[in-house]
Length: 254
Length: 254
Figure 1 (spheres, each protein chain N blue to C red):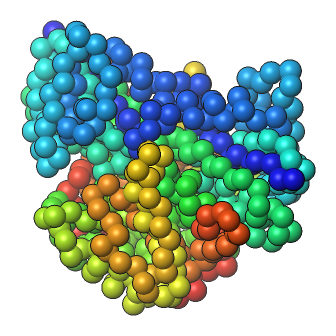
Figure 2 (tube, each protein chain N blue to C red):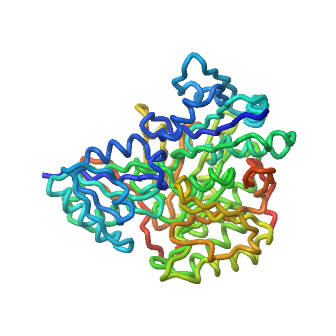
Figure 3 (cartoon, one colour):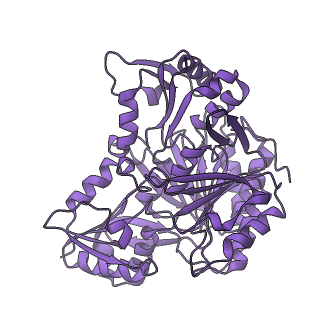
């Protein structure tokens, strides 16, 4: 007997940004697996069970959830933001591919959500208004050289760059090194947005030129967006500065 | 007297994927500007007014909306998906920068939404599970050479690629040409996802290898996702094939 596993995106943090589809999926599941801060966000009933784990245990968590679903239960795996962007949907697929054939019979659903870069971009203006990319700065699962190659390829081709997992206690130098790499190919005036906890009460959005971008302004909950050479700034008296990338482009200016 | 302008993301199409924040913003506005199919989605009251326009009139629409807001009205501009991704938020910022200084005093809000690539990815598995980029294939506002340069840079560096605006009556050959470019640098087995109307009753998700990818499978409402060399396929008896990109990467294999 095989149950159901739903991977649910809870959005960037505000209850106002959780889709009705995600709320319904939460209401319908019995067991909830996830990184503790995400599982803690859930408003569950007495018949629903939380199984929280640490944030570097994605594959183990995915396997546990699949085992529970394979026993016939209705199981949810929750992610912040969108579960398909540097989050649990890929870990669940990895576990299914490597796992027993019964896991392929489980009814799998994935519920998308508003991912961090979209929430941060909305608070800053429209920095992702033209071609852009998303890069995880974590070198836990890929070599640092590959990250540098991607940063340089993206900046060189004129993409705006959203950085996920920019910094952590175990990875203190990577963001500073990324800024150095980018400063070698992008103008020092390129806007850099540090977006933390977008849409939540403790939200903090800061915009600095690349030449002055300080990695210390980021933490694990920050999404960093680095403009392209086409990205522009609009100053407004008494209102926050807008950062946007025009819909039109003439070519890579670098 | 200056009013308020809110740029609202309505998500990919299903009412279940509209955030509560977006629904509230719709309830609070009086005048609604947007491309007709998006404005038509709104469930409005008798005191609310729709002003629909064609899909190549973004800048004119943004200016009209700003003029209305500057008169003191509560105005909304609506986009499908997320308004910051190849949509109206950038057009509004362009209009503000070029427009009268009074427009900078307007209270501007941007409400993020689930953008098409996230909805399509969720239905296919986790193709965006690792570093990825989003490229608009429209050469109305940028030269085609720049699009090719970006496609090749992204594929060469191992990014998964989401293509927005892949094809239209006025742009019939660009998607086929993009597949040709990518086939020169990516394996013919690379999975290509054609995702149309994700989450809606007329949803159609198809997965083909790049060597067999047929541009005729896409229309204006399709988001096309092209895997990286690391992207994998999981076949499941009696269930849809899963496409995912693992969280780990060893390097660009091309």
